[in-house]
Image (cartoon, rainbow, N blue to C red; front, side):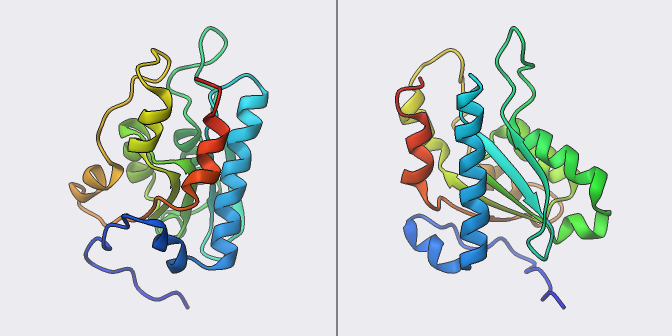
Length: 178
């Protein structure tokens, strides 16, 4: 049986010691999300990837980014589409025990989608701050300087957040892209 979720947000992980709080299987799932970011890049898309795993670590959704016009839709971020797909496979109760693993910290839009989908936990690799350092003022990534923790903290239910974790591994997919 899974232990109950805490009633308060977990402490902010500000360094790589966050990796120490995750198990080897969880780190492997995060690396799968990072691999999705490379696959997106290989398809000519922005290098972002996300997966959703149930409480047993079984992957129920896997998505890369498809947000580059003219063929893509700017709302089709990897996290948003993975969260939407997970709702097709898991019940509301199962979603609260699921984890979304993502190659980069969820943006404002994706954090909202994760919250409304009911996913209870997020593990991300690349921080929004580090991503902004990589993308600069590129018009294809006009990001908000707003950490996902701040968005989730204003909700009525807890979403656990762990990250950044494996930040350098995730950053490598962005080198030379922007």
